[in-house]
Image 1 (cartoon, rainbow over the protein chains, first blue to last red):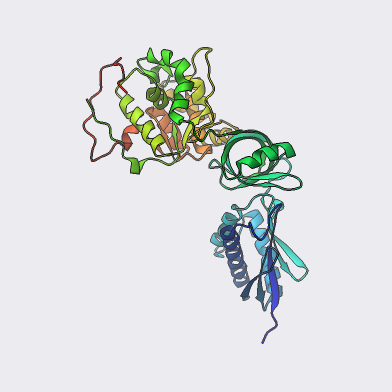
Image 2 (image 1 turned 135 degrees about the horizontal axis):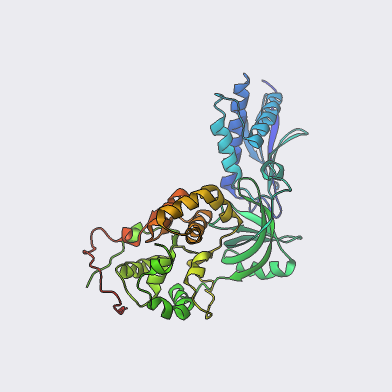
Length: 248
Length: 174
């Protein structure tokens, strides 16, 4: 029986623990990535098998085995180039598999990383290097409505989900602000932030400058009417709204 | 009297309301579109939809010095024209295209820019539709690949009765 070598798919990130890692994005990325490796190996005329499945207790590492560790290393290195550049050989059939992995990567926060380990050999699957556009990315001030999904840490960070963004993201913040924002875990707040984005437009880092809680009990229509009230006399005197707005 | 029935099953999850829709839904003065706009806004709020209002719309609505701040309430989000929106606008509706659109619409470049900024806010903040009565806005939003609808598109196709425009200046009976 051929000798089998263990391959580890390791996930890391601030405040990330076995008890709070998101299962579906993790499995989706692992599935897409191992499928890509097998296809890259086939493209090079080799066969790559993965057998067995284990989750290392107390860590964030999925384990499997292969009888062709050298093929796995070569395929992972080549896949890393394809993933970073987005360029694949013509008619290789690799395009959908690369796109699938890149889609799966987007579900991860920018301060999380995934690494493939074969003995002491490692290959980044997901890292700031594979997703960031570089130090030239311009920071911008933004305000977004977000749900707070995780907060804490020795150097406080908050993980946020916004319907204005394609994926969750993490920001740093001061301890005082973290303490205040922690009261809104799993609730929505309006967050003022300074962020930096990669070339795909995803937030790669940034900080919280302030936040405003959402009035969850207030009547939205009353809020709109209260805001509009000072301007209502003007608009009640207007026959043609679009003409007044210079819309026609 | 007309009977306005909104098809709640067809309501968008995350619509961005154009300025004209918001003004008609909140003022007393009525025109041919008022009842539909009022019913549409009420249905969205009743169904807990995620209503977006573009920050440039606030600039269009506010008149005079008596400005108030729209409080942060669940269900209504004011979305900003930020760097992301500016990049979407620059790529999707570059200046030559805006000039061409302005010329076709008989507007000045300044006027069309407000419309374009609102459409870019919709694209940037992932609105699933821009609801507007402005045909020029509809063209701009379509260029940014954002779906466009009119409030009347959400009228129930089974229960709605033919609409007859009410007289201008009619006080609204809520």
